[in-house]
Length: 91
Image 1 (cartoon, rainbow, N blue to C red):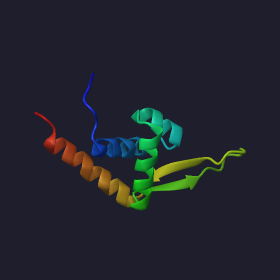
Image 2 (image 1 turned 45 degrees about the vertical axis):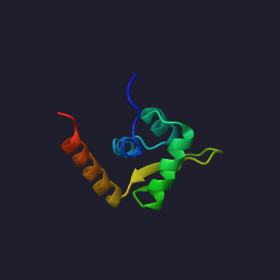
Image 3 (image 1 turned 90 degrees about the horizontal axis):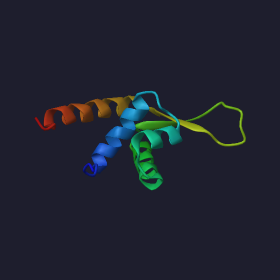
Image 4 (image 1 turned 90 degrees about the vertical axis):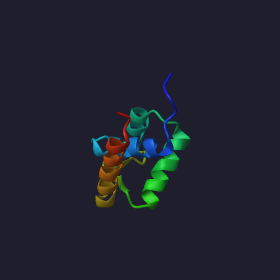
């Protein structure tokens, strides 16, 4: 069994998933393997810091569907986080 992921690692994984082209909430949730509560906390924090934006989908459905995209600040932040992961990765 692997070690627990830090909050920073979880945030980075969510941002990497969104950056990779996975934009729907359920798909992000499954790809990152986090609980719904942790996912919601991370998404809300990223929105508050303007690192992601929520866009209403144009799909015709009775349900409200949204997609998430990284903002320019989010892209810069993710690049910095990935750089830090590389620099401090165990040798």
